[in-house]
Image 1 (cartoon, rainbow, N blue to C red):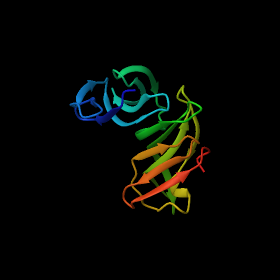
Image 2 (cartoon, rainbow, N blue to C red):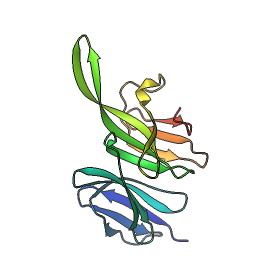
Image 3 (cartoon, helix red, strand yellow):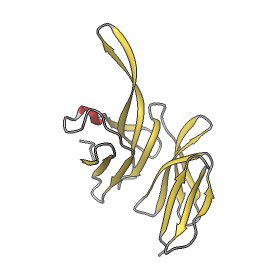
Image 4 (cartoon, rainbow, N blue to C red):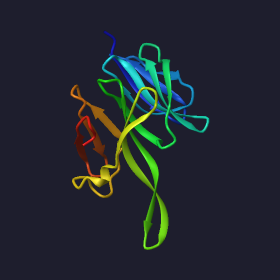
Length: 171
């Protein structure tokens, strides 16, 4: 079997691919600017992509980075950092959204980081604001997700050098 390393390059608008062991990196052009990427259990590449003012989740074949599917992300999913695919075929997406906070008679919009489960057709199934869980720090910086064979979700907190675990129900 072939083994590859992939690196997304938002600025250059490509995915760098290197076959293992030790070949040169080859740029693979993609439509739009790729951000987070992951591989699925079936060997496909899942990439969050910014194109023409909208965010998408693109699924690519790893052998030649040919796009197999493009999923439009709902407007609530703004600035997706990373996505992974579950064993059911849904996607767990780590993203930012805006929240309206009312306090002492004033309204304030603020960015909130969320974790959401989304179906293959782009519908949001469930969401979680990780800050609502008391074991999460009030301020945390995270951009990475991982998923295991039991659909347990791992969220990396880069600021606090921690990893948090959620079950398949985002709890």
